[in-house]
Picture: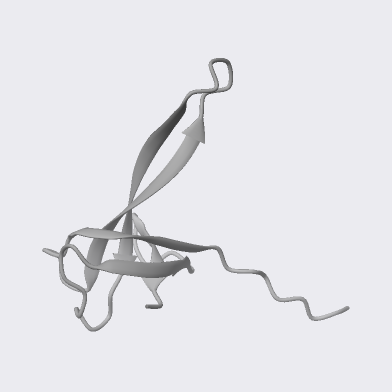
Length: 80
């Protein structure tokens, strides 16, 4: 068998909450197009992201990747 590494999906967003210990909430905006009317609109999804050192504050832009589930809602970790 060959060793193939899985490409990690990187996402970038803005921190909207840093109230929890070692966890931040990051809002990621995506641009979508309606299938019938072809109008473009913005969609926002919130992710709970693991921040081991509690160094990111509200309003900062962060980049994160998916990892193994750390809790019920948290399965991403900060890389930058």
